[in-house]
Image 1 (cartoon, helix red, strand yellow):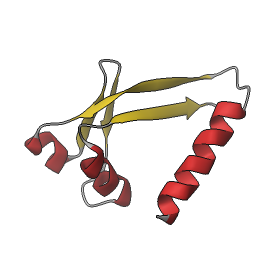
Image 2: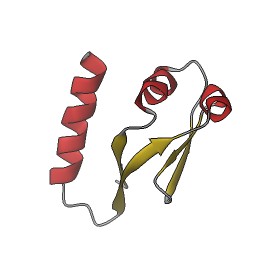
Image 3: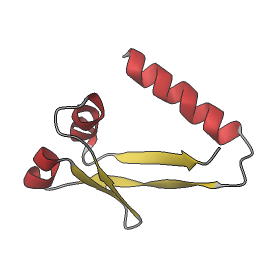
Length: 76
């Protein structure tokens, strides 16, 4: 629960920041069972994420498969 609160705060902060370098990708999170076990996830047709299996982010993404997600990448 605290992870989601921190993620939400960071997402709001990133959205409010006026960074010249960065992007936002929004779309459905998808992965086959095998891809999910190995840590491979696609967001829409624009982004592919690789996570370390067993890590907290991997476990969170595994639960989010099939839902719409937003990823913000910002250069500082």
